[in-house]
Image 1 (cartoon, helix red, strand yellow):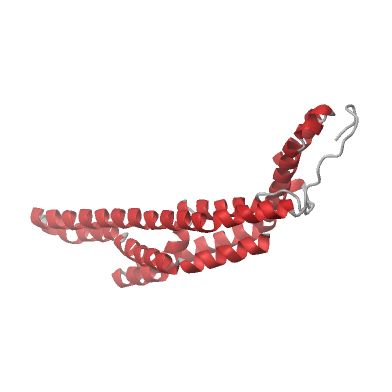
Image 2: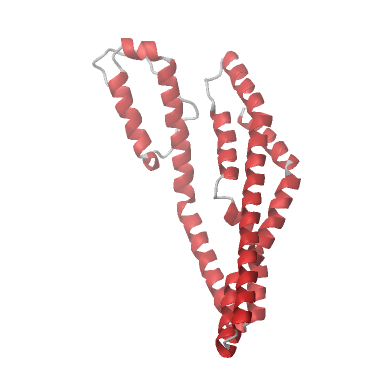
Length: 246
């Protein structure tokens, strides 16, 4: 089922190439318009303070305000496009993923809605703020080149800062990749256990297993990094005497 969900996600994302291209174009202009404030400050110190020209100050202020308003409008449009893409993907493949889960359960496989969780994760990512840095990062070289054109010293400062930030991000990724992957697998496993317990609610309550089952689930859910390897599937709780540990 996971392979089928991934295939449908790839097809749906491929069908949204036009929307992602529009988002990339908006990101380019947003990053260019971010230069409005530093350019305004440079012109303020270079022209206005020296000449004490009120007219120049007014013109520069009006141009900067218009640039910032345009940037805000582009950011709103970019966010709307991503929300539309995420909603469209959810509507396109959500029904088929749910149908595949129902058919798999009817065929004897372990009941699971992990496919729907994956689709929801993609939609949340597209409609959240986490995708914006990915859209802005490719235009960083353009930004640095423009800063170099303004002044070489400012350009070198920007370049060094960009390298330092990239190095910190890379170190953070390498340091947390295995822990995050282990935590994700353990979280999926704990959700499957909870789903299995709810599915067998009558047996759990009749056998008096609920307190021990809840304690074990809380222990695994609170410390997922301690689970070295989670089983591929969550087995249904086997009936045991009320006083036995789960």
